Amino acid sequence: MCDAVALAAGPPAPGTVLWKLAEEGRQLDANVVRLAPGARVDTHTEPHLDVLLLVVSGDGVVGSGAQDEPRALAEGALLWLPHGSTRSITAGERGLAYLTVHRRRPGMQIRSRADLP
Image (cartoon, rainbow, N blue to C red):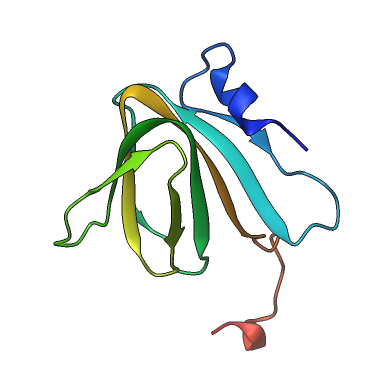
């Protein structure tokens, strides 16, 4: 579908989605993202989806937002970020490119009030 290593090594386009899974009928979402050196994905919580993250190139750290120490990320690192977890990602001196994979989010739906939680 794509060569993630070649994408990460291509011309600089920091802070962008270099590739995303867009095929019709898919059950997964996937993205290859590149962060410039020192760039950060702010601390956030994903309440509904588990995310699998694979570092394609570069280095950085992932923080948990809790009392845990940030964990170093290097090329080849594979992380599971369970739903409900709080995390942040900061690129190191070489920048950071990574692949994320998670269950596809459902599209916007119009529901009746009776269906709301």
